[in-house]
Image (cartoon, rainbow, N blue to C red; front, side):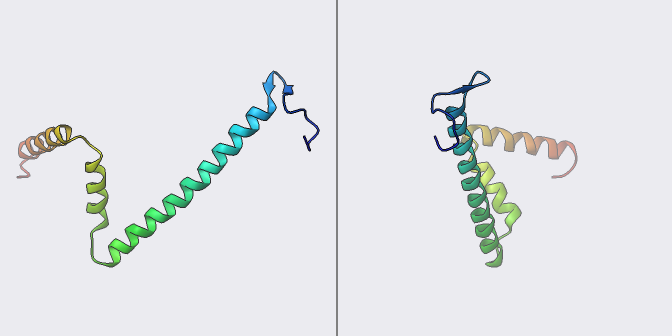
Length: 88
């Protein structure tokens, strides 16, 4: 290799090349995640500029990730708690 280490060389009991590959992959994925986060932020900004409430939009996205029966159970429990607190 260009850095003077053999491709299968172990340094301190660690396979240096394998370690470097994992680090490279993780760094690449972190960059992709950052780019995706920026894209998502931009889409929320577009939605806001056209009049949508971003807090509600985020809540909708969150709720869509929950199974329907779990979501219904959460909604029912929320209603019970709100009634108990006189918020109905």
